[in-house]
Length: 124
Image 1 (cartoon, rainbow, N blue to C red):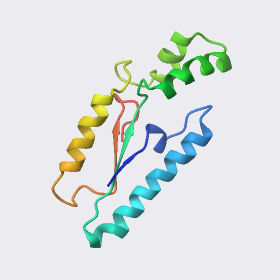
Image 2 (cartoon, one colour):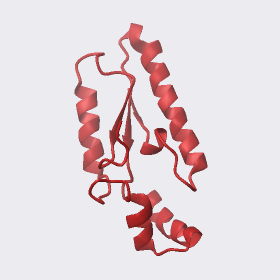
Image 3 (cartoon, helix red, strand yellow):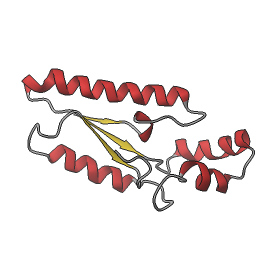
Image 4 (cartoon, one colour):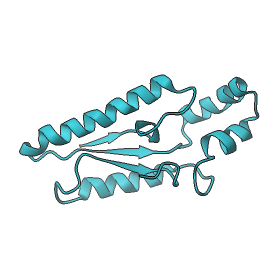
């Protein structure tokens, strides 16, 4: 079983309390499923991407610019991507490649794990 979390499953950011709360809950659910499902051969992992340029993120850029009193470019550079190692958004391809890898993993050696794909934003 694969869950779609977020870096916000692991840490919080300003202006995102409801989203962070939901994503933290998904991490707990993933781990509970891994524990409870093990005897039935169920593996459970959660993918935790950084910011992916989706319609949700595109909507947040001008909202955060207004809230923070900065330009949209500054929101992208200094808020969303400031902690990445390369200033890049995570891509759908990054996430899908990891999903395929996790789905194909042959054993329960990899279960109950949060896999972060964030250009180094969150490092464990």
